Image (cartoon, rainbow, N blue to C red; front, side, top):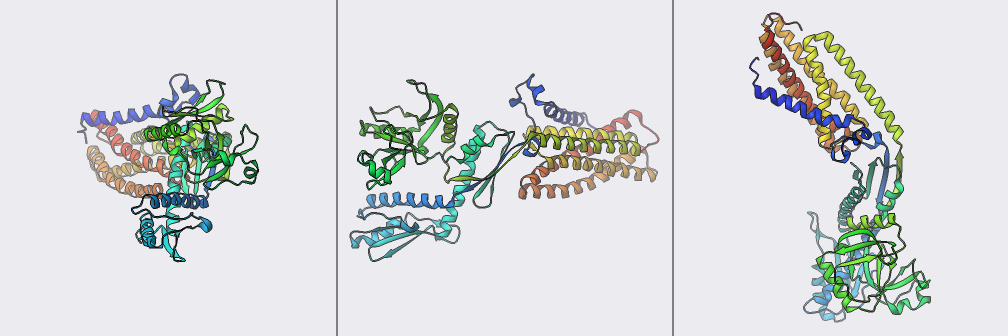
Length: 536
């Protein structure tokens, strides 16, 4: 028992010192700490939505939008496949009526060739081997492609995964700390942003699909005002809204196929037009996009092209000269804030599916302040009660246990700060429970020491056997707690996960303080005083 190596002493003290050092910034008010250091660079515990207030938004995906996008994408693939196939297959117009894609093969002898080529565009889904598109022939020469339910389900799941990451990137660009972004069910995303009291800007940012496209203007279709007003466009073109049209007609006809899109962007930033100083968005394409943009502008000098965001034309300038630098400028009726939000949306990528807000809540900071006061009060009362009980019951060894409890709380705070963990109201409950767990370990040790003392063992033997035998029980009990906490962390969400985080950290820290720290203190006492009688 007395043989406590110096390296072990210094290791224990180092762990305690590091834990306390990282805990201190979280105990100092942010305004006070900001006068000394840059708060953004100091590890601190983040407060959850229920403690700091903030915005809660529930987004729902438009699954019908996924089906429409798949149909449009498959239309382009079929057209390209028939054109590039060897031998080339001549087909008629492609119809997308009724949610299926169909076309007629002009030469009936090429029907089998067309079907085989089309089937290479389909993929298997899951382990069943079912294809994502069903291909069949009707009326002898017409090929019909119908999306299967399993293929649509897989597409929705993939779109939701991408959408969740895009939402995460957009919120990170806002500079918020520790937002919660999780999927709920098949087509919903829960967004919680602590500290954000005005959800309007967040809703505008998250609700924007940010699908950027560059298309050539159909000059013939755009010249027919009556057709534009009626929403009619020539074959191969489409009519889009153009709110800032200089002609006064709030619509324009553009070629349906995009010459370049937002997937080929490398960067986007808010800037100002050098000629009129109005807010604009400066964009830069990647190498492939830059080459494509240069080629298209070289081939279409003197023609107008439209910059389209979410199927709405922002501007339609003329290509006065080839644009070879891989950069462009998006102008429109922007403010600095709206241009910056568009830049953020473009940088984070377009949403693969349209999202709409179906629920929103704003939690005021005063509610969180009340929760913090109540939680801190409960923790203080619990700690004082435990300290008094341990002191009266175990004397000197109760003092060691009380020191372990205080250090236990500080190290937990330090570990949470190191990992930038979020503290929620259930997390405070986990703190109170951890205090009890830490005391339980010390009670087991002290009661075991008492048993050995009643067997007329010497103080040295009583303490040594007490720690040795009780440590096994403590380890087994903490293992059970750890398994329970791990299950809550893996399967739970929101408040349950916040409780599990504090509980798991507390299990490791309480074992360390109870088994190693108090043993070090007891060994130091026995080595220095060598008592003949143990008062416990």
